[in-house]
Image (cartoon, rainbow, N blue to C red; front, side, top):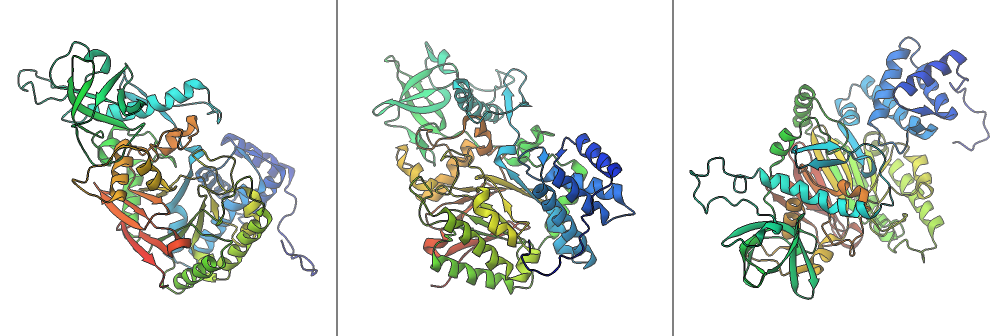
Length: 545
């Protein structure tokens, strides 16, 4: 990349021999990869570093490529170079015998939304099976129906295991009123007495609510209902207890979201299914990784949202943060920078892409000038709701290549990923989502939330997304979702941590063992957060004004 006039250094990029080419192509093909010419040269150059251990080096390269969130199976030079630079870095780190640098390379797996496996539930066999085949970005009508059906079935199968809602094995032991077995809406007709139903809440006419399940819909009366915490938004699934009146309206006494299932229970039932993405970890390996995770006391993630590259003030503040972390004893292993990356929305009226591209380049220079961060920290970029991209629908793909090329020259191993995205640190599962959800969820509420347990809207938000097992349970008219990729927004099994970056005020809330936090808006409030994965502790931070 150098533009100086001095003669180029002797490069190891001698053209690979024909035998070598053949061998590489065969090995890559076996793993399902196709090599472009420039990628082949890049791979050959890497192997040339290990003349006496070529095969081992090749296997290592292939193993690492398997872990990368690749857009396609056809590899170009960039894809191979990214992995090579990681491996070379790891090797140099081993030489320097610093445990922290090596652990992070293997500890961290970033999963792009568009490669998260999709599962369907079979209600008869009571098992999940993986969807095979391609997923169209532009779905058909059936895909939209499947989005709701799949969401509903994930919650229904979870509820069916809940001790209160499961069918009693011995009718005689349980008295009539203790079991709360769910009645299908279709079979409510002619039922008297208290019943439990579960369905999607909707408002078909003004102030007339309905509950709909896979068998039918029934009008419900919520006037005197006692509700649990959370935002009852159209499209959320609720469980309601009440009775069917002779008028055909179901009068609700109490209603709430489906009960949670703890992570361990979900995982033990889904043994061997990779719901999170990033590969299934065999048990022995998981034990080894979790002991490493507990020892990784130095690892820290720094998370900033709303990093406006076009704002002089924001960039100045970012410089202060980077300087602060450059000077600590052990630098953070990961910086997560989330959008919006521009103070104005990148919509059709936006005409400063060239400037924004250069501002990304400037950011690259800023990071590269802090040598310790450049060497030991990874940088992860997640687009915000107003950043450049093909549409407003979720999940959003990574930032466009045009904008980030300048930055990549300075930070070649920066990671650009979708919104939302998932990160696996050893065994810990972390979900990052950048969306101004709080305001929109409050606006879309069908009934005001109860203040019995909490009046903090962030706590209501956390309760809603965890019980719904979905990051964005808003109506599709409010927030479009790519129908075939709705599964990327699901939170089942529940992750260990959810980062909900929102422009509302900074907050952290631990709910039933799940850590959720909003780092706040760095551009507006100078707030950000640091997270220590080994203790799951969040430090909410802010710059002194």
